[in-house]
Amino acid sequence: MLTITVLYDNVAHDARLQTDWGFACLVEGLEQPLLFDTGGKGDILLRNMRALGLDPRAVRTVVLSHAHGDHTGGLAAFLAENPAVTVYLPQSFPAGIKDTVRQAGATLAEVTEAQEITAGAHTTGELGSQIREQALALETPRGLVVITGCAHPGIVEMVRQAQAEVGGNVYMALGGFHLRDANAGQINTVIADLQALGVRRIAPSHCTGDAARRAFAVAFGADYLESGVGQVFIIGAEE
Ligand SMILES: [Zn+2]
Ligand SMILES: [Zn+2]
Image 1: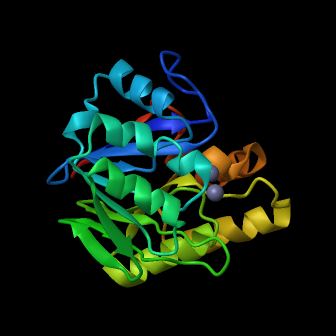
Image 2: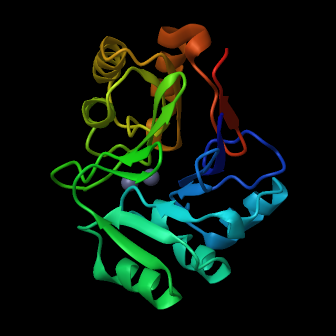
């Protein structure tokens, strides 16, 4: 069983938590807890974790999707709290963020190609031509769960790549899909492409945009899951 908790999001959900522009989520049920992205501000990230009773010191792996501040801004504060982690980031990251990892005493792992990070958790490798970004692909009893930060290389491309690298059906995609500036036609094409890839459930938030989230909700019906800060997705063997 895998539990994914959204720790940082500009989409509100749990009133006990602070809402702020950015994204981060915690994956539990792997060998060790894994933090995907860190949001924009470390104090908000750590406060939201504590409000949910989650211990930052339990995390052993950090995966950073891409270098934008709303995904990496919380890193230094997190590492000050818990430097006993390996940080997987795209090799194209600016030197300053790599220095932050080294100076905190954490282990730096620079990603270029797809690889298994820890048992059942894979990175797609660096994708995209302008803003380089990696997605996380988790093997679950229901199929692959793909998590994206902003999906700047394109959510369809990132899901397709995750499936090509790891194999199997795509059970769920969640995170930021970067469709805020997309028009209705572009949004519908993305939805059709994801459905053609066999994506069963969808939980977009962060930079997906309200119009796109509404369109996903209509297209996926009961398989559209509301996301937002504090939302918890539990993926087990049964429905
Ligand atoms: Zn973002
Ligand atoms: Zn971004």
